[in-house]
Length: 372
Ligand code: NAD
Image (cartoon, rainbow, N blue to C red; front, side, top):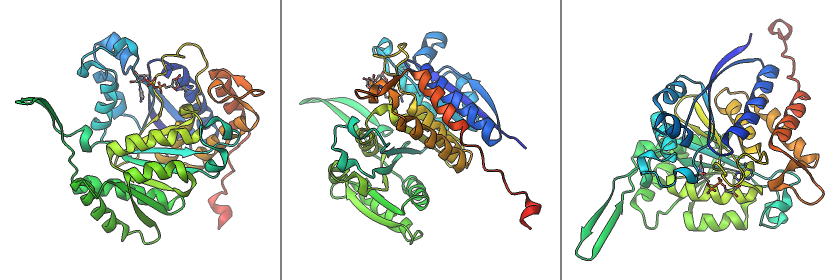
């Protein structure tokens, strides 16, 4: 019997609609092969929603997201809206959506793809075997604490507040340990416990949670050291878990390990199965409309959707393997192409992934009677 799933599709701005189209192509193909019936509901978000409906996250968009099993997002923003006041900026939609859906865990895997060894600014031998996952706390910390600017006798003074509650720290650490169990059983918890009180709480909670996962190795690392080690010996990391701002910075640093920001997918998860899946990159206004954007990040985000929202590792791996096979064939988009490679347009790359995916038929399930 087909599995029914409702998916909210939010293409957004800039290259968003171009790449999401390729993500949807792959989603539909995988659905057909792996037994799903998808109901897709499209919505406006970001700058295009401001233009049409005067708000970055219209009520109707929020409603279809609340009602969905998973959300596929392109990107938001662009120079057109850069001068808008904070409440009317496209990026406001992302913060609101994460908060409304309580998506507290942001997962950003960074993996070395064969054939892209020379497209990073780091040496190929440093990058050999890189396969790490940054788990970033997404709804707390300094981005959400009280902020204000006030007059003082010495001039203006600005304050940002960094607050974490124990339960917020515990749930993200627990998620990281669970994820490590499906990988190489190592968690690096990153903080600034030599200076920050919130980091000392973070470390205490990490120690306590770790006792429930004796099969997972925990190490603590200060954020400044982690930033250095990620460049020095990136292959030694498995799961890196950290608070909101440190995660924001470290996950962008992880982007260079893959060669192009166009290769990096992400998932934002809450307590249940519903997740928001989107590329790490932005709306790339400099190449929007040219049909050259790399759709791999959004296609790999679709793979994460199968893994985390539909609990379907087989479909996720088939999509990831298809992307790898297309790259192995020497075909790639302009951002990662070298001399001699076949440069594909956005939709040609999507078509090639679909063709590869068709070669991965689902293993026929053994009927229950046959197993008895
Ligand atoms: P960006 O990620 O959009 O682009 C940075 C560089 O990477 C550009 O040269 C771009 O051409 C290239 N690039 C990005 N995605 C690519 C792809 N798929 N294929 C090939 N090349 C790609 O970052 P930016 O230029 O700093 O930001 C542009 C806009 O996007 C801004 O308005 C920013 O606020 C917004 N933004 C949105 C998100 C999001 O929606 N989650 C994230 C980051 C930035």
